Image (tube, rainbow, N blue to C red; front, side):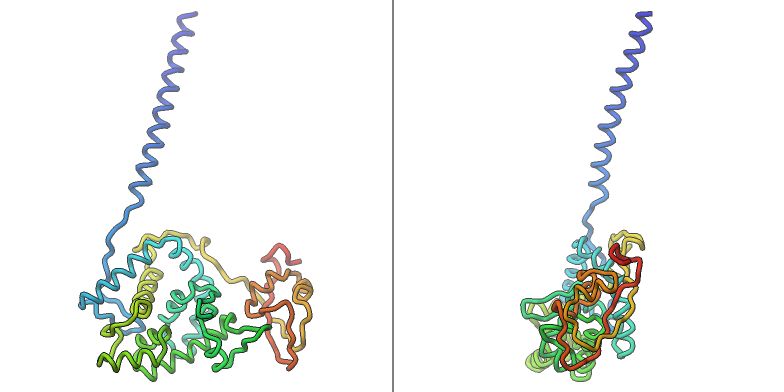
Length: 306
């Protein structure tokens, strides 16, 4: 009986040893898998790239290198890339039909991506919103900007203004590529550089760092967002962000307290501001009796909704 117990004990020890060995091998294999799964590759720049149907002259070695740089930088900035995929699913369906209605090529939605990362950003120069519009430009094009309301944060209205600006630039400069560059450097700045350097297109211009990279960055984001599998981005449809359905409430009087206003629709102040970032204060003076359309999320999408 003792011999049998000894044999059983020996087998148990052997089993534990084998399990521990397998466990160690599993950890080692996992580490190897992590190492093998994460590799940095040189990227193949596609032979035919364009912006708004205007070909990029990739046979020019200097142009090729600049394009290669932007593809590398934006491919291997993985966290930012995944956020762009997530936000694009949410905001492109709003931007695309407005561009189309105004005769602006669809590629300009990627300009919004590089301008703001599809967020309501504010630059050091105080350019504001998804389209990074300056206050003077906003007012010149009919947007309201004051302490109560800043329509640069209104995605639909600011997209309309961006379209007006781009159409004027295209008419003045002659190409969509130059119009895109002028969105960064201004029509006057681009026109002056073209004249000084006696050239007629963006790719022949010697420009400052930001404007010189500008169109290349747009095309890089376009290429990556259109071909996630090629550039190693993996996600499911449910990983992407979506718009919360809303309905509009017309307001043509003053609102003394937006917290109470929000509670009247079963939401809190934060949720009201998430859907109406153009409302900049906790109240609305509205001395002129102007009509505003405020977005209210439909029931069932937030815990606070009754």
